Length: 150
Image (cartoon, rainbow, N blue to C red):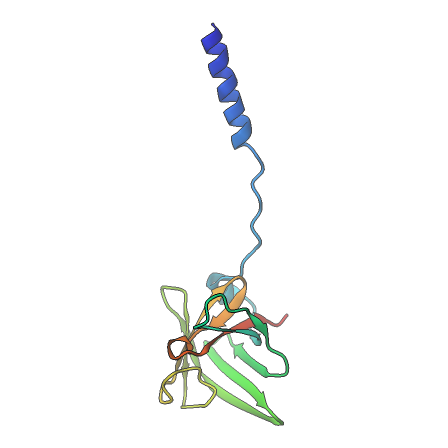
């Protein structure tokens, strides 16, 4: 009888422990949300981080007005304001099976984040509700972080 009571108490304790409240995870913006969101949408450069430095800190970007504007028809613009001039590069985007956003520019541009000056492609991905451009990291360039402008 004591064994049965002990087993019952253990089971009851186990049930109580397992029913503890689960912490809610913050909502994260994913590529699925991106493809279902209202368009056009603008993503503005807000931070950068050195790629080849271990534990490098994310640094806020101030004064550099760079952004992507995505349209529902799978076209985009990348805008960058340098001094008093706004430079615009345009192209089309697609989403691959790994949930990367692939940007294909219509023509070569200095705005394209790439180690190869002839490349017309950039790759973006989502992490923690940010759009990240890591196209330059293979040539010691920075990670660039963009936030959705609401």
